[in-house]
Image 1 (tube, rainbow, N blue to C red):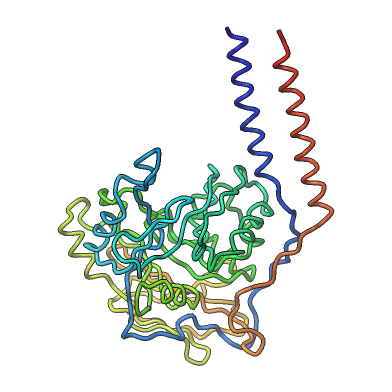
Image 2: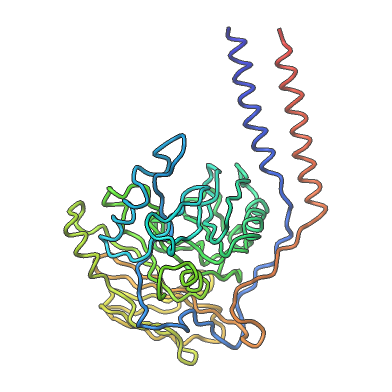
Length: 397
């Protein structure tokens, strides 16, 4: 009996190992060297600021209950229930990004956004995929290499409008080297409730990989006060229709925010305080000066730049003006308020407007043919050797 159990366990482990090997198939890239943003001009993500359309509070990363063999799947609450919960907190736009599934808007087809969270790995290398009409299921179960992650970004980007890197703070293997290498995404999810520093964003920005920052609850439990309405993105957009949403997310006219769990369980307090959040009144660039004006006095406003350095710090103020030096590759603004609210701006980056419309790097990474062959031959050899050992074990009496 024990021998049978050992064979069953070994077979299960072999199947798991086989799955890891198969999903590890990948090209190996020769990543470009990190290069800081440079140029005579400063990219202004808020160039299209129109105060008549600002700001619409948005949740871009939201999970719900879905139809299927294993309910409640993502959440106990259906999409209409999740939408109603957010509406009470003052949200105007809610998109539903369930894992590996496109979710239909619960009541208005004109607000349909085809977006899903891609990824099966226990390492939580998850991405939001915008604009695709189908789900791409292939995913490395153990994405240990930057090349495996880049392969995913390249594959997902083939039929998507936009890719978002989700919760890097909670992704196993988020290293400075990986963030300096990866490209092919347009949005970076900030905060994740773990910290306000967002060093991983600066690792990527300092290597010349430009992206906009969003913040989301990554909601699964709308009935838990500490999990809903605590991170959001404020968009300057005329509506939540996909064409408007996509234009805004690609253009950068928005800011991310951390919001305290007001009331600590008292929902009436939470609802009331969420309607009185500090906001950005004005933001942009005049000449070489980056500026931001707020609706309330902040404890401090910090300017962060290359290599996560603090470039400037203003205290007890509702505005900041920072003249970017020619050597400043980029500058992003973070405002900290007395009750714990935090506002994150998108980065202002150096570029040459005569050569490009923005500082995004659209050049594909180069595949190293020799190392790609060697890597995949190694996977094949491991497969045959493990298969041989498994058969040898099964044949034992």
